[in-house]
Image 1 (spheres, one colour):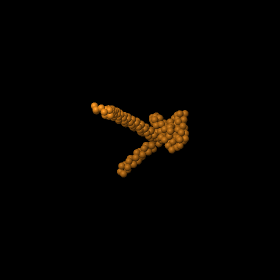
Image 2 (cartoon, helix red, strand yellow):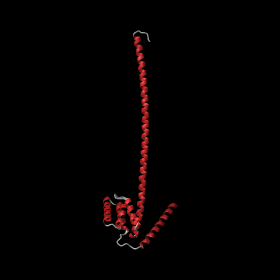
Image 3 (cartoon, helix red, strand yellow):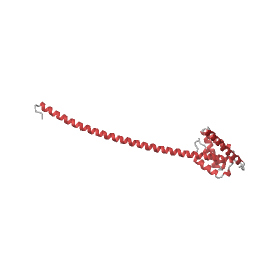
Image 4 (cartoon, helix red, strand yellow):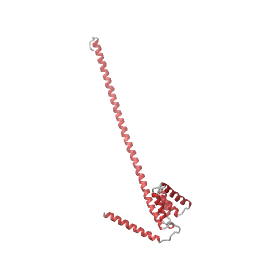
Length: 202
């Protein structure tokens, strides 16, 4: 319980500090024509919870705007669309590159835009690290499974070879026994024939 309180207190302090910094930055010169943060957030909200048709429409609009009228606003909007997970065109790698490029010139953005770009860059980078770790673990599991499968196949092959060798030995023993039995049968027939002919046994 104490740990939870400390975590909550720490979170509140961090949030307050961030809000104070954001409020301070709001006092910086306003960039004329720049949209409010709600414009970007609206797109991201629709992307996160919209149907595929709505998601495709938002992506196509953001992509074409960034290509036809490249500027801070259109590039940021497109980068945030790419950074938002949950739709078919999500691309964290491209979003990371674009957000880094935009943040290299923060004077061209409003404080709200800088905050959005910073937050989503951190989120994208964390997601890329997790994705890379997931791929590594899957690859490692695949290699382990392949190694285990190969070891199992080798063990099965050795067991089959052993059984086949045992079978060959048994067949040889059976052939030897049959040969001896045939020889004994031949001797018995010879003795019976001699007895039937009245000849003394050899």
